[in-house]
Length: 126
Image (cartoon, rainbow, N blue to C red; front, side, top):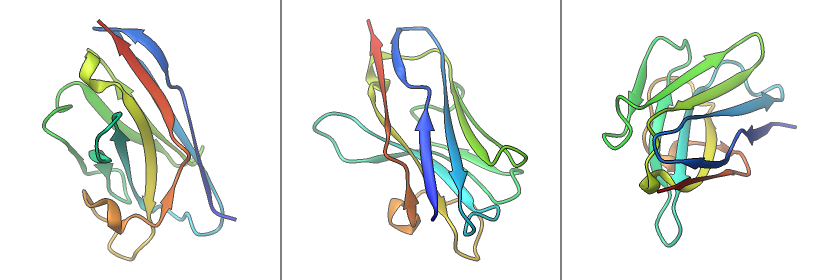
């Protein structure tokens, strides 16, 4: 059974850092393209960052560019999101997602991701 499990969320002061992890398991997950999305209270789920199948290419939403870094560890089958210089507007539930299509490249559209984690809450206080 394919599964994504996020961890690492929590409460942090503005300017602080957090690292989110997303552990993947299951036969389908053979180096898929992956992404991070977030949903703030009362808002739609939005794209945060994506990484391609090889890990060589990454792409970020303008709102997080220069502050967040997406990476992956194939040995641990884990996706990461390092979040620095956090702002109150980064407060949201963060989700990891996997795109197992043959494309394997950067993907910003949430409807192209087949598998989703349950989400982890990130709260940034001012």
